[in-house]
Length: 621
Image (cartoon, rainbow, N blue to C red; front, top):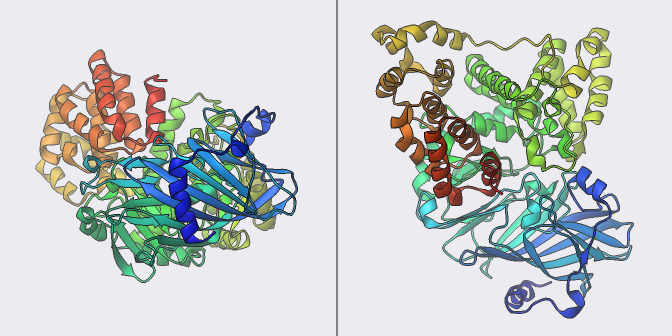
């Protein structure tokens, strides 16, 4: 379809409802078991869609996207193609340019609706005209007062199965496709996608995008707002709101060095450019590894570069996750465990082993805390998950990230770093732009590495690590000499010894996190007051402040309530929200009341991902 025809369809979709021969009908899906196993209605084993072109109009006023998704059919062995949709209206559907009837399943609370489209085996294309709902879960429409620069902002969060709320698609990581897009938006906004981003609009006033490497649907990403760019070099730079840009530029000054270190470790970067976009504070995650355009939380802008490991993590995903992708969400550790391991190696290469050792110990402390909250035999503490019938977001925990990382550290220690690095380089090269399951990876691990030495195969303890809950009995926790130094002067700091306090002047965020985590719970509020007066924890970066506020609640330090309220009003990252709200929820009636009052006020500024977690905590339907 021509651009002019598509733009006219945007207008038609505003004023014309579906014609009688394309009215959707309710159809009970008889494949409940398959749906629960795949988290998708799509019949990707019967039909292959290999290319998408999106025509989108961004409407900030109505908080909706109006679009047409044009899918190219590469192969079809069925009389219908089924796509995933949720929180959207399907207006019209065409097959090979001819309007057709379509059917939609009942609305599942997690998986949405299946969109069944009749096709012939020789069919070559699908086109779906649709309109998203204002409450579409992937779309975060920020009001001016919710952004740093005081102007509206839109961003998406498609992982794990939210791409279907803004693009009708086969919303499973097993399906990869290339894509392009033509996007219309008011002239005051710049539009970005997880693709090759244009420097300006075309002659028709549209932003044109292309992603020539195949990606899964969860890596589709869109953002629009008052955004400026700074390039560090030809292939990398940073986007942010103008009032945030200078701070972001200084914080990520080592980005080129990180990319070089990553390539030295595990081979060439395959995605062309690597840019980072800093989003408004409601972004629910630390970062999202959208190809070519990592989305990042502003909470890492600490001013001293101490939290840039998060960017190293998202960069590492360019190999582990984006290049070689978990085929199902049960295999999530293949994305995240590999990436945390790779992140640590990047940080070691750029900042030294002492720095990476601290990160490893902090990661172990997070994992230990997660395991303590679980039952000893909790199946969710296995690397290979069973997410049947559940939201794949349930698999996002320190198990996939940290237990996965420590399994790879165990393998590195077993076979030697040189051998393990060679194995990983070959792994990323051999399976580039493909998907991987846990079973297939274990087979590859055995055949291409462990079988070379009987002692390696015996010592890998694969079953204990991958298929059993918890950590293996012989697991040895990591240590950090820097943290041992911290522990040695804690008593002196608590007694206000000036010599000990002088030693803290060189401490990073990681030193302080370890220090706060090591304090007794509950703590004497007089001691807390003294520490806060001297070190300013309540005014520190989000990593430090969040842990400090949790300790304050657990110690019933009521004077911290205004600081906590301000923090929760201005930070939307789920990593910080969940432990702090949980501490308040589990405390005395005063804090329980404050938690609900603060959440009621702050919730409109949070992303749907964070809201879902917190609604469950507060038992809100």
